[in-house]
Amino acid sequence: MNAPTLVAPPDGFATHTQVQSKSAVDFIVDSVKQYPGEVTILAIGPLTNIALATRQHPEIVPLIKQIIYMGGAVDVPGNTTPSAEFDWWFDPEAAKAVLHLPVKQVVVPLDVTNTVKMDKTLYDRVAHNPTKQTIITQLFKTLNGYGFDGKNGFETNPDYTTNIWDTLTLAYLMHPSFATQTVDEWVDVDTSFGANDGKATGYTSSPPPGLQKMTIVKRFDNPSFFNFYVDLLTRPVPVTLSN
Image 1 (tube, rainbow, N blue to C red):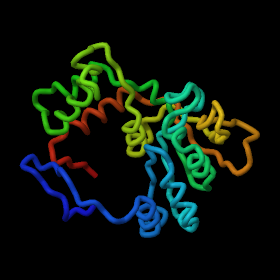
Image 2: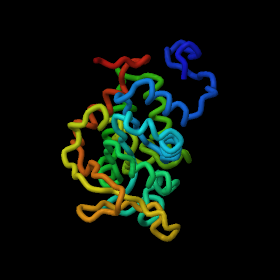
Image 3: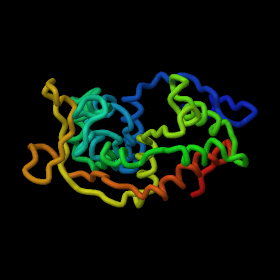
Image 4: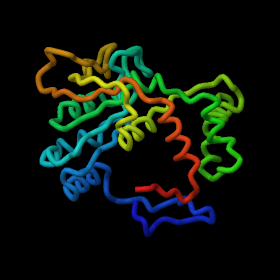
């Protein structure tokens, strides 16, 4: 995304940008080389691009500051199969390759995201605060109030709840102190093409070869995170962040 190509409507929020010719893989490689030791990769989807970038250009591996994932289900059931979380299940070979990289890594798995849910009270703090309505809160209400099908949301069902997967991971990147319980384990992914394909396994001892210990987030400071979440979503547009 190039800033000069952004088009700002009257509300100050960009609506579109030109499609870039550079691939995601090349963007990762170029960014890490341009800022060695400074780039944190926030992985909130399948790990295909990261696996390709580090396989095609292994020289960038020692230059990556850290990788923080939303992914995996270590000690809880999966959300795509009984044992696997979607992002790692979608491309388990890529997940396995990236988890084996000698880079500092943090995993924010379903183990913790399952414990941090949006309910009607939290939803109302964003969608129905009369003094803080913006295009962002309107989009938030459209998505979470009625759901993708127009039926499953907080406006139609006050008992509805939903997980906050990716934003939780972003919050950890910005405020690691939100994590109130972490463990350090070796983590691997099943690539057997069987019933457990994509399943994450944490090892406290005797790990498979080629793994390194990484941090697994188990519990979050929910009240502090919720305040952070509401604050970000209800800021004036265009959004400004304090240093």
